[in-house]
Length: 137
Image 1 (spheres, helix red, strand yellow):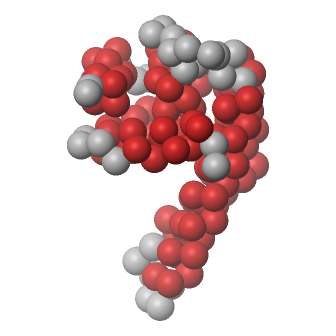
Image 2: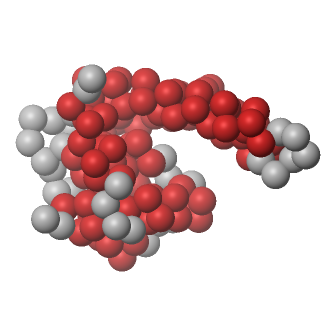
């Protein structure tokens, strides 16, 4: 197991976190594992964005596209669920790579830095809300 993966699973399960992450993904094009990494510890932002961009372009993005095309299709629900499981495993693999470029302590500015480096247009309010939901005791 990975320390980051275990932390991310627990953080994602907190009230409102999954919804906030998926909203940032769907409306601002953000990368959820990268956002979680930034809140967890941050670290080498350029290396993390490079890893996430390559993995998203080559693996996770195409899997997500296939899953979304299958979702709701007649008789394709079981296949969609299997693709979803592979997509999740691909995100876990990315998170292992991100753990290797993480800092040793949390970095309060990493979330904004990552979101800007990734691109899209997340609002500072949506990022602050995500951070607050994850870090709330």
